[in-house]
Length: 453
Image (tube, rainbow, N blue to C red; front, side):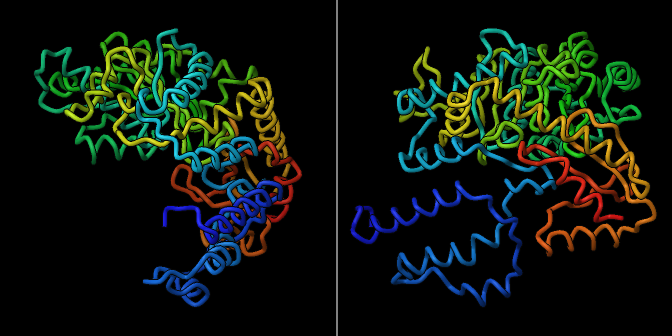
């Protein structure tokens, strides 16, 4: 089963040909299928004797693959899309074929070296010091969780091992759901919700006032504050400099969640929005969101990596050859031990195309977003709800009910025009575009806007 026999060699060649074809084409949007239809078209695939190479490949090519939406389609504008470069997607095949393990320097020094160069580029964009470093995790969920675990462990040591009555972290209503889930469910930490301003931003003055209103017992348990550099729903950047001031006053860990928006650090046109990010103790950005890498990849950076290493390094007799002083082991900086080299496709694409190309690609999406905002503002049937900071547009169709938004979204997908899902803003359903694909044009947005007339 593990040898490259005639059948498996043919399978690999056919799969490679399919991958090349997929990379070369503009993929159709495609659509999900209900379980009953998949049962009818596919049936049981796991059998005692196997279904064979030809059947398995054809089931994927003809049925299962087309039942997965193409998130790199230019009019896939829901959630936060994903648009990897061809270079990144191609190198992802190599990472899988080589089965690169990148949890430790001992086993994957070449991969770790390359990943660290990509991490350094991001650290430089954020203005983090020379000693900053970290790891590529699976996504923002694990990146945020790992950073906050390191923050709590650091706070505990600074308190001489004496925990407070309850640990707590300051967030806002626009903080990502993964942050709130990590804190309340996984870490069992209380959340202090700081009211946002009229755009939903956490600002330093409100954070300071909110904390001052707490009882000394509650205030004593705060060990971190989470700022957001590009909220998922609205694309808004918090007052990072103001938050950093308050965190410094209280000796808290300052974590910045830039999973979506952090990519815009590469662009001159909006770099000023991120003032203060250089003071973060930890920072994340997902290359699989707006830095054109395939799923799944989150760059997690620490100002002082030694603090994260102290929190996350796992000890066991069999790991002694790995946990060598002075070596950079990526598994020391997040909650995972076994680790795929998930930063390599991003590194390869960045090395091939150059950082200027990345800057220009992100600027292109910002320009399309601004043109989309203009189109919405000029459309009599629409109203822009939030002036965009980055590449998210939130707007309403005047007079529509929730059912009409839902029906419109379903029809767009059924007709293979676009994938756009409704969201909510201040308790009301509305429409939302997330533009992260440089192939998305203003004409694409206009086509969808016109469909709402």
